[in-house]
Image 1: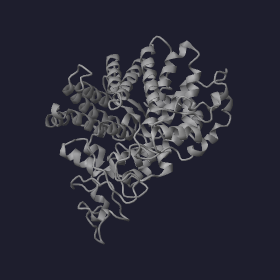
Image 2: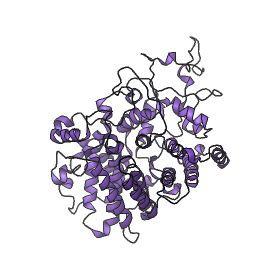
Image 3: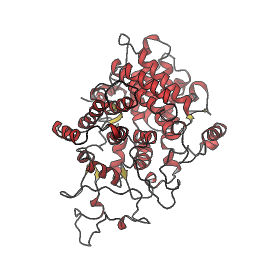
Image 4: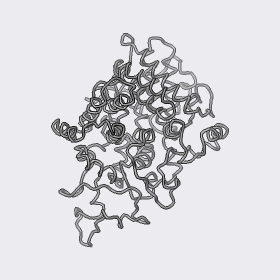
Length: 509
């Protein structure tokens, strides 16, 4: 049974909350005085928040897939509007997540935090909302750098309509502190969310594990800019207790009859252009990875797995038709012939459905980050054991997409035997496995690549690209910010650097 089905009474309300600001009518007073007696049940608000942060087609299409997935070379596409594939700057695509978070989701999370802050009996609810806030904002800051954070979402509550941009160093310090506070304060003896929590159904211990697991992820993000802080936070997270199995994975289900749908799945239903990237397919083939047939589909039965090269076009140079992988179709070719785009692997419908879960963080990622921490001497565990645990978990959790995505235990064993941990190349192995494991959570794939440099991607050079043929390091701010919030926008640009795709943020220096 889906957890979302248990919350049918709130469907009309949450459906309203999920759409555009026109649905705000009637809620202004709630936002002005969130503590009044007719306040909405926080369970409904948390459901809304979790589904909103999971994302809809708009931001997942533009920010997660068009930009992040192609820059990190999981996917490739020929049309020019797939901007990340060719390092183009599209203002609305670059700002898609910004457009979704700040007008709606930011104020909703602040409203829930305020509602749950005044009653000590709601402390669990408050800290769980803080963890969701961290999930939301760490994606935002990892995409753009310095962003509105401490004052964001407080237009209704405090009248702040032009929030300052906080330095990323301060954002990270606060997010880590919030996670530490949540992990320490969550109390199983106090009330918690019920079925409105579609991720863990109010399970306090699983939320504690997620807080520590996120602390590990964010702590490791600091390895280039502040290794001492990275070590401290990673060690603290591991000692506090992180995820211990795939049962602890943080995800939002999307199989409810109300119509809540996986934003990635909505994209793949609408846009048939993306293919598995040549770099990704070649890596999988070279490693004999059984996930390849779960991640992708060979269009013509019996053909070899072939990925589409990034940075190609079917309408201008460099033409895909000139690539050695291309097979021209004769005039009488059948629709199923091995030619044209049928040469290249498509994303597998098993993992790209509108009813598929959306994953925020997996146990596989946790184990692989622990392996890296052990390599760095920040954790007493055995890197090889954590590596194997992470790889195994990354293959086993795919069944959560579809029963047919199950990978046999014998195949996993064979893969680990053929690709054992090698201390001489441990950092590369571990982070390539993170890259392979987080497919479709492209925000995280992109951030971890910038943190580590793995995998060692080959940039593309497409005419008219905005980066000089280097992989972008961030996405631009929303263009309208220069007019709507000019003083704070200019301060951020002055502090961080030009508002360009090539500017490195604080932790990526």
